[in-house]
Length: 212
Length: 234
Ligand code: B12
Image 1 (cartoon, rainbow over the protein chains, first blue to last red):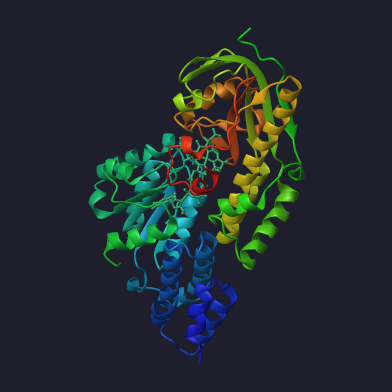
Image 2: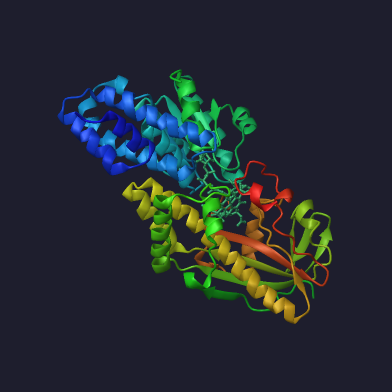
């Protein structure tokens, strides 16, 4: 029998190889993929997230856990094909036009993915049209935008206006973040959510979709 | 007199070994406020530093200018008027000469970061990103060290580095700063939103004078209360 406690510990401890190994065993034994994800992996991600919020774990540990989770998920994905309920929600994420800052956005993307979201990362220097097209094509539940400077964050409003013009604003939640952004600014431009780190970004995304 | 650049721009390509990268700075930039990472993360840091030593080509450029404070929030350097904000302005009393500088971890390091992103290893990507930030800042420390050496010979003190985008000095004033340095200096370019490329780059100013003060880096003058660097440096 695959040791599911070991899978929980592997994801929590950010150990990729053991996480993949136990998952492979469990699959071979015919375990239900959704049970593997919801029973062991998601609780482990929730625990590392909780430790992070409490200041007992740090960003690299969050990412190690997300990496272990993602490695195991890769094995499970083919088994989940066509099962929409397997994903918590669909997210399009990018850094706004004029801005080349990648890492904050990638951290958020990685954590969302690690916590069961389907993430479409459309990169940096993204113009409004591309954000709108990506939301339209994917039918995303949430659009996430990131920016590094006060000069580039203003473009987030442009994107929100473009969503409105395309008739998509009421179909997609908008989350924003990045060093110069704060809650007040997010509200001012009409975003639905803001967070200042990758862990609370996941909590916020779940809250917005009512899956918290 | 006031409008003059007093020396040619000093440009240097450095080996990473010429910079000091304090471990504590790397840990802080990774989000460890005061604690040390566990062994597996330290191993990733060591691997990144090894890789950086091979690939990274940091560059620095700096030039000396005459200048004066023209108001509580403004300063004229090399004939250009900068609105540096009241906070930075208050540290410029008695400044008689100025240094404008650009530092960068270089295009090679940006390429390394892009490669890591493509590999999908988010942990190493994050560590390398933080190390790149520390390199760009260490290059500023090197500029300051060199400037201090010269200033000391003339009996002058040097302030902290101040950068457009901080403390009420608008990030767009980088345009003026760059216009006073040779075009394409250190291979750094500014885009329309005043973002520098390569990303791991810093632009800024140092002031020199007989009476100016060098503060321990002053978080209390920065408005960003949520910054992870804040606690330790106040
Ligand atoms: C490290 C750093 C640097 C490094 C590296 C920068 C880089 N882009 O890689 C160096 C030293 C090179 C640097 C340079 C500069 N910097 Co700087 N820098 C920082 C610092 C300290 C941390 C930024 C960082 O990399 N954090 C780590 C990453 C992982 O975090 P993050 O990107 O913020 O992302 C997290 C959250 O914001 C959030 N998030 C991000 N995106 C999203 C999206 C969504 C949807 C959600 C929900 C959440 C979310 O989750 C992420 C993960 O936890 C910040 C201050 C701060 N504490 O944030 C200033 C800061 C960004 N810098 C600033 C400035 C001004 C500059 C310079 C212009 C200074 C200069 N004149 O040289 C240059 C610009 C560089 C350039 N290329 O143009 C200002 C920007 C404000 C402004 N006026 O626009 C800041 C905010 C500092 C301040 N006190 O004001 N900088």
